[in-house]
Image (cartoon, rainbow, N blue to C red; front, top):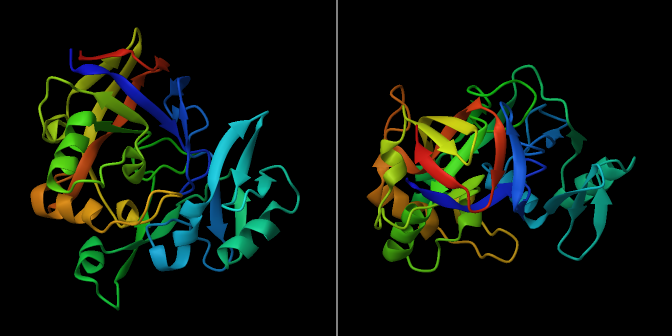
Length: 274
């Protein structure tokens, strides 16, 4: 046994704060209601993402929770908008400072702007921005960055906390599943997971396909969690590895997985190798 499910998170709107849950169904698209909505920049047609902090950093001041068949979006001052409100786009555009449309329909080839992590760490004034395609290892219809499920271990968080105390909040790294790995010591065990198959609970089966490369997002404020460049720097200095064979080494933490056998996941479920 690898460990148990120590945390479950879904993010009903891409790049907004999400919510902790205790159980959910998982299909080939990922956790139910995870990243099923996104904001689209009406000028560029690209997905709004805090990976471009100077343009979209305010997204992480908003939180999104599922309720009553709709998504409730809450601003820092307590104002609430619902995904079904006819004027939701107006309110969200005003808050963000850029015209956006809230949608559940992904473009045929969705893209977003991604700031170069090493430019962020250097404190560069002219940060390079790359246009990245998303969801290439996921079925169409969601707004996940790469694959349907994102895993992170408590061992990785413990290692981050050892190297950079005070920045190891799971919320910074936006996992779907935090695997409690009490016997793994303090390290990055997910580095060895790609190519292996996990079973969670009775039926849910995941194929781990890649290590998770990190962007600017962990450095940003997430609601009450303050900004911290160290949340990315610690990975750049101590876990710069190859996410996929076709990529150069990058700061990594966590792993991406595809769903082989759908099933229900609950807090406390066992996680083991198949």
